[in-house]
Image 1 (spheres, rainbow, N blue to C red):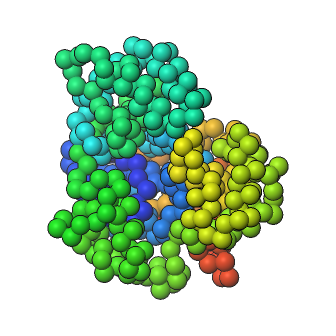
Image 2 (tube, rainbow, N blue to C red):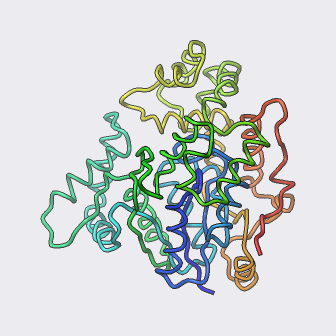
Image 3 (cartoon, rainbow, N blue to C red):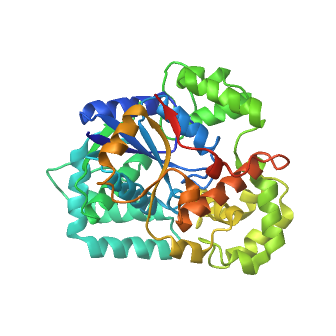
Length: 404
């Protein structure tokens, strides 16, 4: 069987994601779609709207055949590390190709950009490093290096615009695949409809996940987002609200985060992944002053540290993820199975001997430090959703979700 891989967060699953899954399968003439999906905390350093199990159900109800979890240490890291971890898992799962959405929509400019960067790799890396040392954020440093060394050079071949978020991720997917010598064939689809951060507009059926979440939180109802998501997703969101009472967000998680910061203090904060350059003192002072998450971020935010980078620090503080933890979990060592269709199950049986990493369907059977840490993350997420009656131990109690 031939599989195409995709990298997703589904926060929440929407019509654009449905288009991606269906089109990726058709464009690559594959038999099934394999998704590597972030767990309960996401790449922008924030809690997922709903947990990974609910998002897995959304996926297998709408065109995805296998869902593997991207480990926490990669799911909450910067774009290069996020992309590298995802590509390693898709390659380990035996995918023949992978497909990503991009603002560009054509694969040739990505290949041209990769080739040209490789020709000036040392100078390119030095330019990025120097920019970061000046206090420029990584995305802006990447774009500076690209604009200086690549875009400004005359060429008869088109290069890709690396100032756009989906193009950046797509570039890193391809960069990672090339570095590891993967045989997977890269493909891309043009991103449809709204931009990455755009609000919803009701003259289209496709909106950004950011816009959908904003509309959803403003109304506290699925009524304003029904046209942008499959019906099964509406049902899942409504069921979650009835059962859990609220959705994941830093606004609701902040009291627990604040408690953690104030209890542990600056010395402990300095051991947490991504906390550096004396930021532990600023974070501690901000927690003393700020009663809300927005107030906290207003104190901490600066030109040197992007909103996303700060949120990643806070995610690691909330979960207790240290520099030592990151060092001990360098590369993915398993494929954590979250859900499958009957087609996905058939693929697993067929490919059992060819998978490059062990498939973990029951956490109790795994000795992976990364997998066990993921279970702790799930429990902490549950406390953020409901600190009085958290649903604990789900990683040990819930088997992979199945759809016949």
